Length: 395
Image (cartoon, rainbow, N blue to C red; front, top):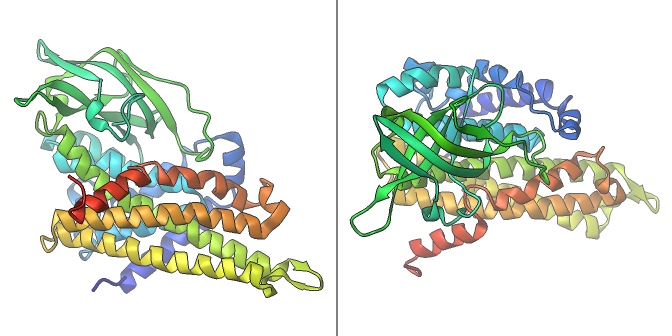
């Protein structure tokens, strides 16, 4: 059975210390100002956070991971997410949606061109899947790419793309229709489009409910031309590639949600011990104590589901577990922890009472940040569909 090693726990302490020193003191101001702290990315790179699943040849530390590289990444995301969800998703998307597709499907030349800077935190990469009219139904992709004179000509739009418009964004991988398959369905391929390419426009940042620190933009492509060898992986394999990418991403989102649940349990417990009413701490009342006990249950259950899925992912990398096992575990973990996170913020805010509605208390920020966890990397409805299919209930 899986368990976290002492090396993993030591790594957790390292990331927790970093988050406490470099993120916690500034995060409330960054959130108010909707400021993306570009300087934090190379600091995270120096700590090795972007290179946990990347071979040493590209600046990573995979050879030294002792078989638990993906688990280490989830620990880092959890600990950053415990302090701020936006910083956690910056790492999660930077690795899972930026680095991993290039690492998994890229040519040697593509890996050598992009990975060293991405691993070091000198650059970020995005992954353009979602469109204004194609979210959960990713097969409805309308962005098109046509080969012309040795170049892909890309036209279309993407929505809600993380890490896509920072001053250090180097490339965005986008899914696009590149033809039609024999059975008449769209042929979906992945194409890498460097930042600054003519015809590639980044829209102004969204005005979001939460994740105010995270960089999120819409993208548009109009006659955008890139070399034919910017194809990532095999032509027509883009749909299959992004499904694999999403499996990993769902475990990462589960780790992000776990960090939030843990913080809500910590905040609510501390406040219930300090705040008094009618001459005693409010935590002495069952009406307060019992919901906080539920937070402890959510945290423990979420931890088991998240790190079982991460362990299975590491075992799959070693050839000891199947893709189907990871897919099922990822959906279970993501579904439970994301929905529990939304509930956890509601409980914590209620414990804080009127103070919970005030922005100077972190529970308010986490309350705003929680909802997207049930949407990104596959909605709760999609997770239930994946789980049901695994049970043989849906076709």
